[in-house]
Image (cartoon, rainbow, N blue to C red; front, side, top):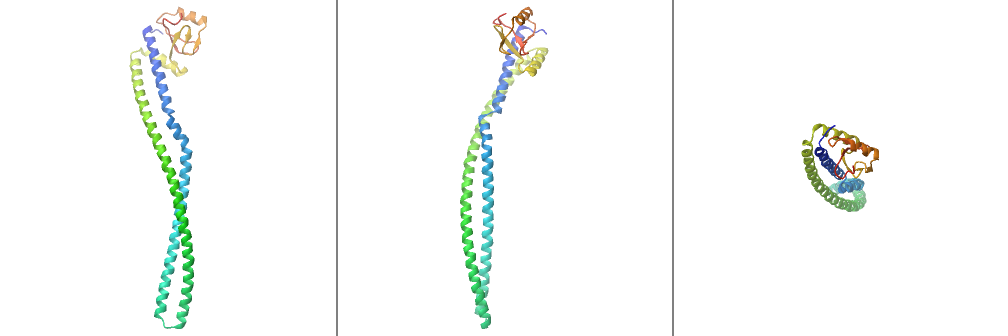
Amino acid sequence: MKASPADQNELLRLQSADTRLAQLAHATKNLPQAVELTKLQPEIEALRARWIAATGELEDARAELKRVESDVEIVEARVKRDSDRVQQTSSVKDVQALEAELASLAKRKDDLEEIELTVMERVEALEEALAAVEAERAELDGRVAALEAQRDEEAGKLEAQRKAAAADRATIAEALPADLIELYERQRARYGIGAAALVRGVSLGSNVKLTESDLSEIRRAAADDVVLCPDSGAILVRGEDSGL
Protein backbone atom coordinates (compact mmCIF):
# COMPACT_ATOMS: atom_id res chain seq x y z
CA MET A 1 0.00 0.00 0.00
CA LYS A 2 1.11 3.54 -0.72
CA ALA A 3 0.53 6.61 1.43
CA SER A 4 2.36 9.90 1.63
CA PRO A 5 4.84 10.29 4.50
CA ALA A 6 2.68 13.16 5.81
CA ASP A 7 -0.43 10.95 5.95
CA GLN A 8 1.55 8.17 7.58
CA ASN A 9 2.84 10.60 10.16
CA GLU A 10 -0.75 11.67 10.90
CA LEU A 11 -1.42 8.08 11.91
CA LEU A 12 0.69 8.75 15.01
CA ARG A 13 -1.71 11.52 15.98
CA LEU A 14 -4.61 9.18 15.32
CA GLN A 15 -3.02 6.48 17.46
CA SER A 16 -2.39 9.02 20.20
CA ALA A 17 -6.07 10.00 20.12
CA ASP A 18 -7.12 6.35 20.28
CA THR A 19 -4.74 5.71 23.16
CA ARG A 20 -6.19 8.70 24.99
CA LEU A 21 -9.74 7.46 24.36
CA ALA A 22 -8.79 4.03 25.72
CA GLN A 23 -7.26 5.63 28.81
CA LEU A 24 -10.39 7.70 29.39
CA ALA A 25 -12.60 4.64 28.97
CA HIS A 26 -10.49 2.73 31.49
CA ALA A 27 -10.54 5.65 33.93
CA THR A 28 -14.31 5.97 33.60
CA LYS A 29 -14.79 2.25 34.20
CA ASN A 30 -12.48 2.25 37.22
CA LEU A 31 -13.36 5.46 39.04
CA PRO A 32 -12.07 5.19 42.63
CA GLN A 33 -15.46 6.30 43.94
CA ALA A 34 -17.17 3.50 42.01
CA VAL A 35 -14.67 1.01 43.42
CA GLU A 36 -15.36 2.29 46.94
CA LEU A 37 -19.12 2.05 46.37
CA THR A 38 -18.70 -1.55 45.29
CA LYS A 39 -16.72 -2.29 48.45
CA LEU A 40 -19.50 -0.71 50.53
CA GLN A 41 -22.20 -2.88 48.98
CA PRO A 42 -21.84 -5.80 51.45
CA GLU A 43 -22.05 -3.34 54.35
CA ILE A 44 -25.13 -1.73 52.78
CA GLU A 45 -26.83 -5.11 52.33
CA ALA A 46 -25.94 -6.25 55.86
CA LEU A 47 -27.27 -3.02 57.35
CA ARG A 48 -30.44 -3.31 55.29
CA ALA A 49 -30.93 -6.87 56.56
CA ARG A 50 -30.49 -5.65 60.15
CA TRP A 51 -33.01 -2.87 59.54
CA ILE A 52 -35.56 -5.32 58.12
CA ALA A 53 -35.08 -7.66 61.08
CA ALA A 54 -35.34 -4.82 63.62
CA THR A 55 -38.43 -3.42 61.90
CA GLY A 56 -40.07 -6.86 61.88
CA GLU A 57 -39.37 -7.43 65.58
CA LEU A 58 -40.77 -4.01 66.45
CA GLU A 59 -43.90 -4.52 64.39
CA ASP A 60 -44.49 -7.91 66.05
CA ALA A 61 -44.02 -6.39 69.52
CA ARG A 62 -46.37 -3.51 68.73
CA ALA A 63 -48.96 -5.96 67.43
CA GLU A 64 -48.63 -7.98 70.64
CA LEU A 65 -49.02 -4.80 72.69
CA LYS A 66 -52.22 -3.94 70.83
CA ARG A 67 -53.60 -7.41 71.56
CA VAL A 68 -52.80 -7.09 75.26
CA GLU A 69 -54.31 -3.58 75.38
CA SER A 70 -57.42 -4.94 73.67
CA ASP A 71 -57.64 -7.75 76.25
CA VAL A 72 -57.31 -5.17 79.06
CA GLU A 73 -60.12 -3.12 77.54
CA ILE A 74 -62.31 -6.23 77.31
CA VAL A 75 -61.65 -7.06 80.98
CA GLU A 76 -62.34 -3.47 82.03
CA ALA A 77 -65.61 -3.53 80.10
CA ARG A 78 -66.64 -6.76 81.85
CA VAL A 79 -65.67 -5.30 85.23
CA LYS A 80 -67.85 -2.27 84.56
CA ARG A 81 -70.70 -4.46 83.39
CA ASP A 82 -70.52 -6.76 86.43
CA SER A 83 -70.12 -3.81 88.81
CA ASP A 84 -73.25 -2.25 87.36
CA ARG A 85 -75.10 -5.55 87.72
CA VAL A 86 -74.02 -5.81 91.36
CA GLN A 87 -75.58 -2.41 92.02
CA GLN A 88 -78.76 -3.36 90.23
CA THR A 89 -79.44 -6.87 91.60
CA SER A 90 -81.03 -7.71 94.91
CA SER A 91 -80.21 -11.41 94.69
CA VAL A 92 -77.59 -12.47 97.23
CA LYS A 93 -76.70 -15.45 95.09
CA ASP A 94 -76.20 -13.25 92.01
CA VAL A 95 -74.15 -10.78 94.02
CA GLN A 96 -71.89 -13.53 95.30
CA ALA A 97 -71.39 -14.90 91.76
CA LEU A 98 -70.70 -11.44 90.36
CA GLU A 99 -68.24 -10.62 93.16
CA ALA A 100 -66.41 -13.90 92.49
CA GLU A 101 -66.21 -13.04 88.81
CA LEU A 102 -65.06 -9.50 89.64
CA ALA A 103 -62.26 -10.95 91.77
CA SER A 104 -61.26 -13.22 88.91
CA LEU A 105 -61.39 -10.28 86.50
CA ALA A 106 -59.27 -8.18 88.83
CA LYS A 107 -56.57 -10.86 88.87
CA ARG A 108 -56.84 -11.23 85.12
CA LYS A 109 -56.46 -7.47 84.71
CA ASP A 110 -53.40 -7.44 87.01
CA ASP A 111 -51.83 -10.23 84.99
CA LEU A 112 -52.59 -8.47 81.70
CA GLU A 113 -51.23 -5.15 82.95
CA GLU A 114 -48.00 -6.89 84.01
CA ILE A 115 -47.74 -8.45 80.57
CA GLU A 116 -48.58 -5.07 79.03
CA LEU A 117 -45.76 -3.40 80.97
CA THR A 118 -43.29 -6.09 79.90
CA VAL A 119 -44.31 -5.76 76.24
CA MET A 120 -44.16 -1.94 76.46
CA GLU A 121 -40.60 -2.19 77.78
CA ARG A 122 -39.71 -4.55 74.93
CA VAL A 123 -41.28 -2.16 72.40
CA GLU A 124 -39.25 0.70 73.85
CA ALA A 125 -36.02 -1.32 73.67
CA LEU A 126 -36.78 -2.38 70.09
CA GLU A 127 -37.55 1.22 69.12
CA GLU A 128 -34.15 2.26 70.49
CA ALA A 129 -32.46 -0.59 68.63
CA LEU A 130 -34.22 0.36 65.39
CA ALA A 131 -33.28 4.02 65.88
CA ALA A 132 -29.63 2.99 66.25
CA VAL A 133 -29.78 0.96 63.03
CA GLU A 134 -31.49 3.85 61.23
CA ALA A 135 -28.76 6.22 62.45
CA GLU A 136 -26.15 3.85 61.00
CA ARG A 137 -28.10 3.71 57.74
CA ALA A 138 -28.33 7.51 57.62
CA GLU A 139 -24.57 7.81 58.15
CA LEU A 140 -23.88 5.19 55.49
CA ASP A 141 -26.39 6.78 53.11
CA GLY A 142 -24.53 10.06 53.56
CA ARG A 143 -21.24 8.41 52.66
CA VAL A 144 -22.83 6.74 49.64
CA ALA A 145 -24.43 10.00 48.48
CA ALA A 146 -21.09 11.84 48.77
CA LEU A 147 -19.26 9.12 46.84
CA GLU A 148 -21.96 9.08 44.15
CA ALA A 149 -21.75 12.86 43.78
CA GLN A 150 -17.94 12.69 43.49
CA ARG A 151 -18.21 9.79 41.04
CA ASP A 152 -20.73 11.61 38.86
CA GLU A 153 -18.64 14.80 38.90
CA GLU A 154 -15.50 12.92 37.90
CA ALA A 155 -17.40 10.94 35.27
CA GLY A 156 -18.70 14.22 33.84
CA LYS A 157 -15.17 15.60 33.54
CA LEU A 158 -13.96 12.41 31.86
CA GLU A 159 -16.91 12.46 29.48
CA ALA A 160 -16.08 16.03 28.45
CA GLN A 161 -12.50 14.96 27.78
CA ARG A 162 -13.73 11.92 25.85
CA LYS A 163 -15.93 14.06 23.62
CA ALA A 164 -13.03 16.42 22.91
CA ALA A 165 -10.69 13.51 22.13
CA ALA A 166 -13.31 11.84 19.94
CA ALA A 167 -13.82 15.07 18.01
CA ASP A 168 -10.06 15.41 17.47
CA ARG A 169 -9.87 11.79 16.33
CA ALA A 170 -12.71 12.26 13.87
CA THR A 171 -11.03 15.34 12.41
CA ILE A 172 -7.73 13.48 11.94
CA ALA A 173 -9.36 10.38 10.46
CA GLU A 174 -11.53 12.32 8.00
CA ALA A 175 -8.42 13.90 6.46
CA LEU A 176 -6.71 10.56 5.76
CA PRO A 177 -7.19 8.17 2.81
CA ALA A 178 -9.88 5.58 3.36
CA ASP A 179 -7.63 2.61 2.53
CA LEU A 180 -4.99 3.81 4.99
CA ILE A 181 -7.60 4.19 7.73
CA GLU A 182 -8.97 0.74 6.92
CA LEU A 183 -5.51 -0.83 7.31
CA TYR A 184 -4.89 1.12 10.52
CA GLU A 185 -8.23 -0.01 12.02
CA ARG A 186 -7.61 -3.61 11.00
CA GLN A 187 -4.17 -3.72 12.60
CA ARG A 188 -5.43 -1.95 15.73
CA ALA A 189 -8.29 -4.44 16.07
CA ARG A 190 -5.93 -7.38 15.71
CA TYR A 191 -2.96 -6.25 17.75
CA GLY A 192 -4.23 -3.41 19.94
CA ILE A 193 -2.15 -0.73 18.24
CA GLY A 194 -2.59 0.61 14.73
CA ALA A 195 0.51 2.77 14.18
CA ALA A 196 3.82 3.32 15.92
CA ALA A 197 6.95 5.34 15.32
CA LEU A 198 10.33 3.80 14.49
CA VAL A 199 12.90 5.58 16.68
CA ARG A 200 16.60 4.74 16.41
CA GLY A 201 15.79 1.27 15.17
CA VAL A 202 13.28 0.58 17.94
CA SER A 203 9.61 0.00 17.14
CA LEU A 204 7.50 1.89 19.69
CA GLY A 205 4.73 -0.55 18.91
CA SER A 206 6.63 -3.38 20.57
CA ASN A 207 9.45 -1.40 22.28
CA VAL A 208 11.84 -3.91 20.67
CA LYS A 209 14.87 -3.05 18.56
CA LEU A 210 14.40 -4.44 15.06
CA THR A 211 16.88 -6.88 13.65
CA GLU A 212 19.36 -5.67 11.07
CA SER A 213 17.55 -7.82 8.51
CA ASP A 214 14.24 -6.09 9.23
CA LEU A 215 15.88 -2.66 9.18
CA SER A 216 17.52 -3.42 5.82
CA GLU A 217 14.15 -4.37 4.35
CA ILE A 218 12.61 -1.16 5.66
CA ARG A 219 15.47 0.89 4.20
CA ARG A 220 14.69 -0.55 0.78
CA ALA A 221 11.05 0.56 1.02
CA ALA A 222 10.10 3.82 -0.66
CA ALA A 223 9.11 6.77 1.51
CA ASP A 224 5.44 6.36 0.51
CA ASP A 225 5.41 2.60 1.08
CA VAL A 226 3.37 1.55 4.12
CA VAL A 227 5.42 -0.89 6.19
CA LEU A 228 4.36 -2.95 9.16
CA CYS A 229 6.24 -3.65 12.37
CA PRO A 230 7.32 -7.30 12.28
CA ASP A 231 6.76 -7.61 16.04
CA SER A 232 3.64 -5.56 16.87
CA GLY A 233 1.89 -5.61 13.48
CA ALA A 234 1.40 -1.84 13.66
CA ILE A 235 1.98 0.48 10.74
CA LEU A 236 5.55 1.59 11.23
CA VAL A 237 5.94 5.35 10.77
CA ARG A 238 9.42 6.42 9.72
CA GLY A 239 11.05 9.77 10.40
CA GLU A 240 14.37 11.55 10.63
CA ASP A 241 15.21 9.83 13.94
CA SER A 242 14.28 6.33 12.78
CA GLY A 243 17.92 5.29 12.62
CA LEU A 244 17.73 4.07 9.05
